[in-house]
Image 1 (tube, helix red, strand yellow):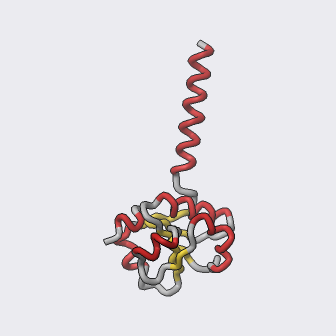
Image 2 (cartoon, one colour; image 1 turned 180 degrees about the vertical axis):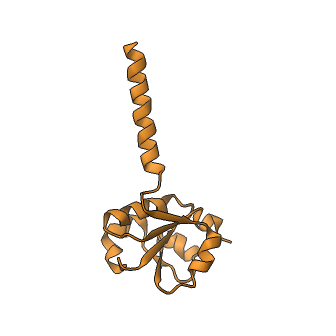
Image 3 (cartoon, one colour; image 1 turned 120 degrees about the vertical axis):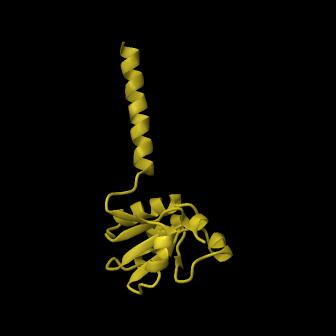
Amino acid sequence: MIDILINLLLISAVALFIYKRLAPAKGIRTISTAELITELKNKDKQFLDVRTPNEFKGNHIKGFKNIPLHDLQKKANGLSKDKEVIVICQSGMRSSNATKVLKKMGFENITNVKGGMGAWR
């Protein structure tokens, strides 16, 4: 009986860990690449691509600034906390992590592009 309880606790802990890693942070908006087309017209927003410089050079959306995820904490001071930040990567995973980093740094108006550049047409 104790073995079953320990196993259930371990499974629950692993499930919670995975959920916390994959779930979007509270207050983060998510949009599709189709919705991004409309957003790109808004000059009051900041557009951030968190892929590597080589990925960015290979293909990027005009108007996006490249700050790789691993440099984000050091270089986010180039972004305004007063404007919405729309974040993209290749698939949506790094940008999701980037939104969490920005949230911890005090940014409040953050949007993640679901599917990333892989979904961009």
